[in-house]
Image (tube, rainbow, N blue to C red; front, side, top):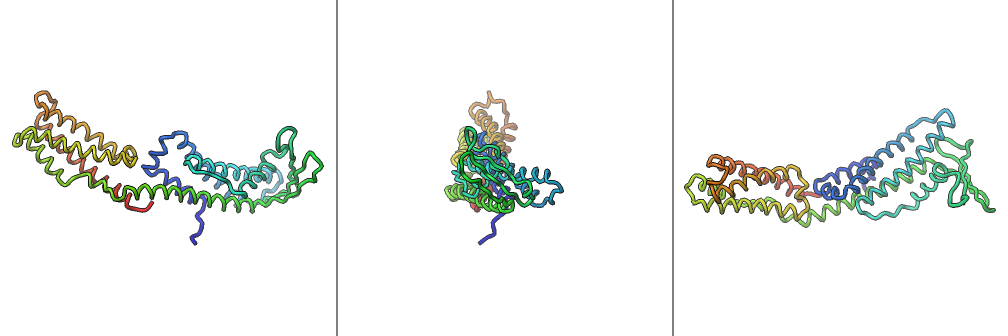
Length: 314
C-alpha cells in the first residue's frame, strides 16, 4: 500500500485540481463557494504550519508560556477540522466527522474553548486544567458537574491528539482528492472520443482559396459568401463543442482568439454581400482572410492540446 500523503501535499494537489481551467470556471459560477473553498485551503495549510511549529517548539521555560502554546495548539486543531468540513461543503461533498475528530473538538472546548461552563443555563459541566500537570506533552483535565456525579479525571496527551487528527485529516483530504479525480475522469471519458481537432476539416485550405479568388475576382462573389459562411460554421461548431463540455469560457487564450476571429468574419461577410457599402477594400479583405486563416491554425493547436489533456488521466 502506498504511504499516506502529507496534509501539505494533499492540500496542494486539491488546490492544483480546482485550478484546472474547466473546474475553476465551474466553481467560479458560485462566488461564495469559491471564496470559501480558497479560504479553506489556505486555512488547512496555515493550521498545519501551526501544528508542525508546536511539534518542533522547545519546552517553554515558564508555565504561562505553556498555557499559551497549548491553547494555540488546541485551537489550531479545531480550526483545521472546520476548514476540512467547509472544504467539502464548498465542493458539494457530504461530510460526517469521525468519532476521534468529535472527541478532539470536545477536548478543545472543555479545556480551551469554554472550560468555565459547558451546556445551557447555569451549565452542565465545569472544567479545570491541573496547572501542576501542564507540560508541552499534555495535561490533566478535571470535569465537575452540578449534580452529585463524581468528577471526571482525564489525562490529555497532546501527541495523541495530533496523531489522531493528522491521520483523520489525511484520510479526509485523500477522499476529497479521489472524488475530484473521479469526477474529472468521468467527464474526460465522456468526451475522449470526440476530438476537438476533428471540427476543423481538411478542406479549410480550399475554403480560403475560394475566398481569395472571390476577392481577386477570379471566382464569383457568391463563392466568397458561401465559403466565408463555411468558415464561420467551423468556428461555431468549435464553440458548440466547447459549450457542450462546459469549457467555452474556461480558457482565456481560446476566448481571446475566438473574439479576434469574430470581427473579420463579420466584415468579410458584409464585404461579399455588398462591396460598395463595406468599409473594406480588396487589400483589406485579403488581410482579414490571411488573419482568420492564421488564427484558426492557432485554434487548431489549442484544440490539440485540449484533446491531449482529455486523453490523459487526471
